[in-house]
Amino acid sequence: MVKPMTIALIIPVLSRFDLFTRLMYSVDCDVRPYVIDNYVHNTGVSGAWNEGMRRALADGYEYAIITNDDVTFEKGAIEEIYSILKETDATLVSANQNMWFKGDERYVPGADFFCFGINIPKLINNCGSFDENFFPAYFEDNDMHRRMNLVGAKGYVARHAVAWHVGSATQNADPANPNCSGEQFGQLREYFIRKWGGQPGQEVFERPFNDETKDIWDW
Image 1 (cartoon, rainbow, N blue to C red):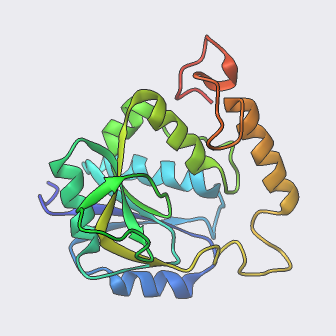
Image 2 (image 1 turned 120 degrees about the vertical axis):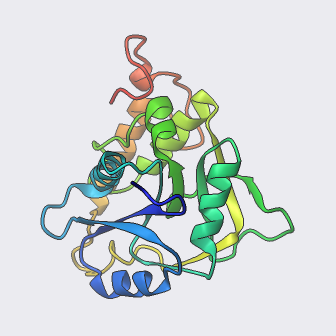
């Protein structure tokens, strides 16, 4: 039986074990960690996120936080994300990255995929899983954001849930051999444009590839 105040914590790890260790030291509440071992078999960001969701669901977890390994949590951030997920109509609740969001509101509309909490069944049932064709990384977040917008799924940024993000730490761990090359990045961008009819923020298709036989969760 899952503890009522326990949330799954899904963390893909490719090469930055130092940052992963620092992240885990910043966790200040009861979580069930799922470390996705991309250092053994790299399934990419989308594949790792999907694997983590599948494993958490199989273990009975309704809620999860998915985070990059180059993140550290401020005190209370995880519990704040969890509380907003349970208390609102949110499908996704993001952390406040590097305290970018100011103001008095507890949460504001938005979605930031560097560190985000989800209602797993709500996301999968309404929007589908992450598109694993975005391999190894980039645009999988834009793709999910587009699908959330199409079905009216709510995303919030939790202003008091501060998480500090290094940014591209895995991508640039070896600058001479980035995880996603410039050529791959261009190919992924073109795939996104074919799928949605425009770059992120300029999408025009309401179904993937403008194909009336496909639904939003079809790749």
